Every structure is written in C-alpha cells, then in structure tokens.
Length: 133
Image (tube, rainbow, N blue to C red):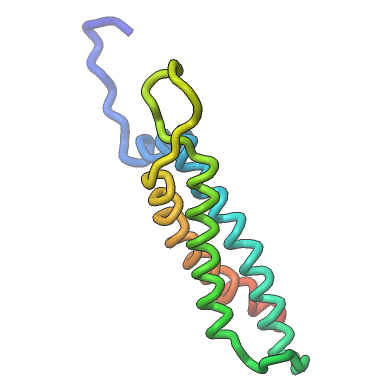
C-alpha cells in the first residue's frame, strides 16, 4: 500500500467479524470450557425433565428447580476452576519460569460462564425440550 492512499475504513460488521475470527486464546479456552460443562449438564437436565414429564417415578419427586440451581452453580464453579487451570497469566516475555496463575484467570472463567449457563439452558428448555413432546 502506498503512503498516498488513504486507509480504508471498515464497516462495523467487518470489524466485529475480524474480532470474532481472531479472538484471544484465553477467551476461547474460557468459553469452550464453560460451554462444554454447560452442554453436558443441560443434557442431563433434559433427560431428567423428559423422564419426569413421561411419568417415570424418580426418587425425590419433582426437583427441577433444585436441579436448575445446581446446574447454574456447577457451570459457574467448574467453568471458573477449569479456566483458572488452563489459562495462564500473560507474562510479557518467554523468559522466566513456569506458568503463573492469578485470580484474573478465574474471573475470566466466571464471567464467561455466566452468560453461557443461561444461554445453554434457554436453548435446551425452549428449543430442544419441545422436540421430545
């Protein structure tokens, strides 16, 4: 590109698409870990919900509200811990020692897990659940 050519301004959509394609690895890891946990637990919740709706007797009766609370607690906790373990703190150089962890890694995992827990459960209950009748 020549120095005389003006820099082309990108549209809002182009900028967001580029950010999506080049997301930082720690963010991708935090989202992936929380998403994996949320999907596995949502499948378990759906199995429980379908069993209750079909009249299958389960010990304890109808504990769907408690199950949802446990789901949220587990997604937040496991997402936070897994992100803390797999996302190292940036050091600024490759010289030095081992991998350092900080509370910021855990905070990244927690704040990634909050919307994921909600969105996965909304998709499971509002979209997937009606397919099972």
